[in-house]
Length: 484
Image 1 (cartoon, one colour):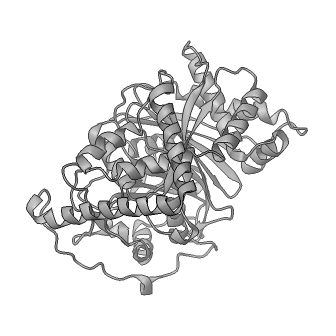
Image 2 (cartoon, one colour):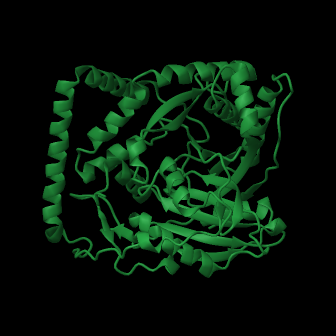
Image 3 (cartoon, one colour):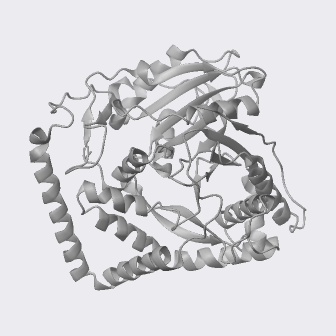
């Protein structure tokens, strides 16, 4: 495993460093049934089983060589000689009655604080006190360490497919080697690494030139995609709305739940994909939010950044980020739900067959050739409000029951980070027939998050009403907030 951060990995560190409100941790909460015997697992049990399995995730016992980015080089991953699992796995208890309101308030508070960059960039909390005897594991990981699809691979390591306690995997665990590293901020000590990074950039550029010479059609496609991306960014631009305001660190969290079968039925009946149904529901929610605020509905629609997985099958458990992006127009000004859905389905079909994903990937690769000092400005431009209004990420999880310590996992509540001046983001996670929309939002500027949730639910209801059977299952929701 390479110990160097990629340009995209470094981007998430830079976004967080240059704006106090941009906390770049991803994750969420895993909710479990009571284990055999009915008691919540002890913290020591969770720590012991994690210790058995983290040997397959060596990056989880490594820290950054420097807590900051910029200057002449990026940080790299080094083994944390003082790694202590107890610094990363803690316990907490919800206040009564331990329902959605209490859990979601706790999640909002959990994600309102940055991870300590002096330690490995992840944290997990065992949560006791959920109603009906349930319990949860909340986990957050810095985005520079893993992306959404990569986090599903991590889940596959930490959870069991069968309802038996986590099996010991001590044979796979090896103590991390201790590397001799220079003190943070020592330019002289890091000079060889700076030369190595510059050399690597030159090699990467040379390889890019060679690839273009050998594959001119691919080079043309990527260049055309990059040109289209820049036109969207600089000429067309995303509309300005109340979603694009300065944000702080305080977060709100809300969720809506649907059955995967219902979303599939809608997609099949109306001629689109499940992802089109997700985007249509989000469009309905955002439309409702703008209307409630007496805000004009942009004629061209809002623009969503939709991450696209470019991870190869052979890269399973290769951490870091392997994503590109599609920028999808959400027709919030269209009043008819079916027309909105059809417009979205046409748009996504066109984008999937276009060169835009390659263009976004090319932009990131080119930005990676710049020194870290210049790369920071380029990184911020790729997450600016002029490029998109909201992030909507849809991550498919396991469609079979998963277990921990003998207890069945019932749902995953996903959390997406917010870039600077983006007041809300939507993460969608499907697991074992349940699709959960997790909405993260800025506390100060999104007091009406319940309106967005209600609009998403009504969006699914409107589309479901077009089916012969008249719709599917519905789940409760509740909105919470936190203060820092």
